[in-house]
Image (cartoon, rainbow, N blue to C red; front, side, top):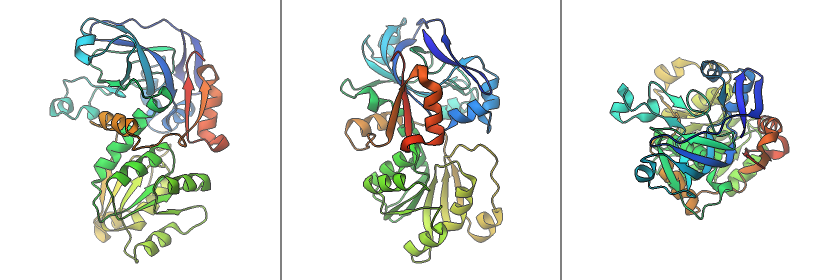
Length: 351
């Protein structure tokens, strides 16, 4: 089969690899769609904290966003996952060890071993076929959910986890920093919590227009507006209650600390290419802020499947481009440089 294999910095290769085989409690799927995450260009260019992790596991097939059709079930997999050949199925992005301190506590997304598809563990989904190995968390996807929607399950599950971590209340004014796929999914999920006001911040006007259509009460453009002043004007000088940071831009973190009210909450989900420096005097001595991290998805895949299945979250304007897998380089460049208004770029293996 054909797959995109990571060998190192600036060294991704589209090549022939062996087909996976299903062992005990394992599932092999034909990958019908795979997505490009914000971290994938960083892996290619060797930026941030993720590439050194990947370097320990190369060669490895790229990709942790995927959806597939079951083609082979290993011994016990049918019973364990209630699957049949031909079903649509997705595995969560991490394969926990189920033995470490965090797994024993039930916090499987914090697993010490931390095997993530296409990054630090099993081969990923930028391939014609892939295997969900033993220990995977696998979910059946409704038969009537198109693959072009189902490929959004992973990023939506992550966005949902971030929103849950922020503990949004009815009276909260919430700012979402970053109008990429994660930010726009966060916007829609946060809307389901019915907060007082939702504000989207992004430097691209087309993303702000889309945010309005998806439920933002107000939008701010950090390239044109004084974002901190505008947020404070919208909140009678108080500042916002919550910032969901999904841009991965250091300046957005600095702005978040400034625009939050005293005892506000910053939920950090962005993936950064470099270290971020902020004034901790503001966090502690001046405002007593809460800073909450968000990582992967935790018990939110079923919610993501439900939201997509019931139409509570829309993807049609967020998934903007699709390429054949063999054009992975063009697809990655389109996503990284936001060509043609790109937000979420996906690929179709075998096309």
